Amino acid sequence: VQLQESGPGLVKPSQTLSLTCNVSGDSLTSGGYYWSWIRQPPGKGLEWMGYISYSGKTDYVPSLKRRLFISLDPSKNQFSLTLTSVTPADTAVYYCARQYLNGDTTMFEHWGQGTLVTVSS
Amino acid sequence: SYELTQPPSVSVSPGQTARITCSGDKLDDKYVSWYLQRPGQAPVLLISQDNKRHSGIPDRFSGSSSGNTATLTISDTQAQDEADFYCQTRDGGVIFGGGTKLTVL
Image (cartoon, rainbow over all chains, first blue to last red; front, side, top):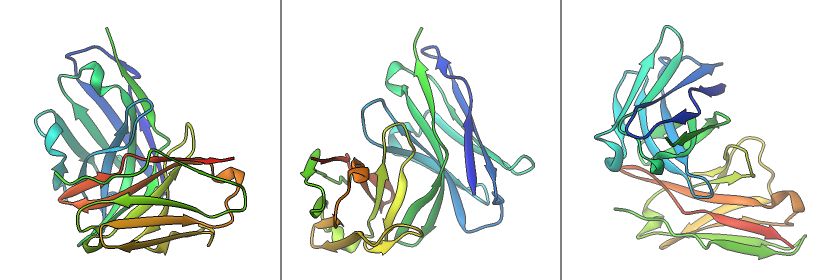
């Protein structure tokens, strides 16, 4: 399974950040897995942002719920992140990842290489 | 909101055993995963469900959990193990610890 993020590396404050994750080696709709976005500000730790399931169900971290939207494009085997009204605090390396979730167990077995997005005018 | 606390840094001599802790309220009621992240690279899953090594991970890496603390143990620590390590659990959403930088002196 391979994941690859793509999108602009620079976004202006107050604008919308859009990233896409292309998945190969697995089908997004085959079931059993969730497709997540995780970010890491420069020099800081990891923050899970949210996921979309194979059926299109989403879950977002409460702090981003008003600004975050994750969608699925089965025809292209891609999923996408849209983050509105960005500020410099949204500057980070953004990773897409395949998430295993079953009851109390969750883990990220496969990650993209990450893409740095800088929010600056 | 639920939090996981890790020491910012741990130092170990080559060949010795390193232990990295991860603390959270009643953490042994939850499952913990561990990740290794080298500079400029994506995290790699080491351990899931407290103590299950992921495919291809050397048996020098092991995990345990008791009470409020989960521990990642690295035996016979090597220079290549120098990296950042993160614990992760589920509490509604996904929670990561703040990360621990392992230095192999």
